[in-house]
Amino acid sequence: MSRNISVKRKVLIADDDDDSRKMLAFLLEDEGWEVKEARDGKEALATIVNDRPDLLILDNRMPELTGAEVYQQMQAQGINLAVVLATAYGHIEELASSLGIVHFVNKPYDITELLTIVESAYANFSISNISHN
Image 1 (cartoon, rainbow, N blue to C red):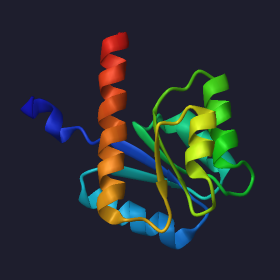
Image 2: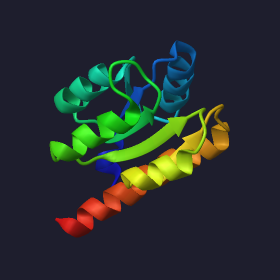
Image 3: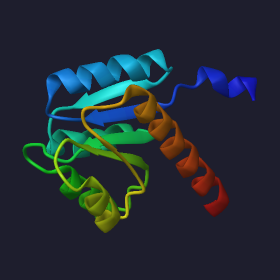
Image 4: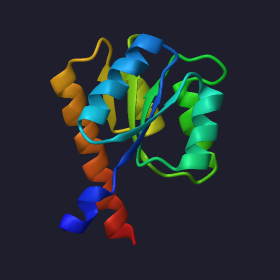
């Protein structure tokens, strides 16, 4: 087990809000994640395809493509990774449920809740992948 500790988990933060993205990057790097950032939906999708992160923190309201559109395109391309949907607007539970996303968080972030949801999303996805392989 100690051999895997040196392998960093990769996360992509897709959010058009610079402050939110930078704050998340700082927090997650401090938790040992290798962080990539995307400022809009198209950049997020390209980064997902090229870098294959382990986890995606996906803001819904972004230029180019919304978070929902990014997720739908991932599904259409058969890209499967842990996703945490984030938004400051409205009915996130309904949106997440309609997309089939289990993990979601409201903005502004409660840091403890966010980190718990990130770890849960990653752990649940990892367990799911192991059981399907």
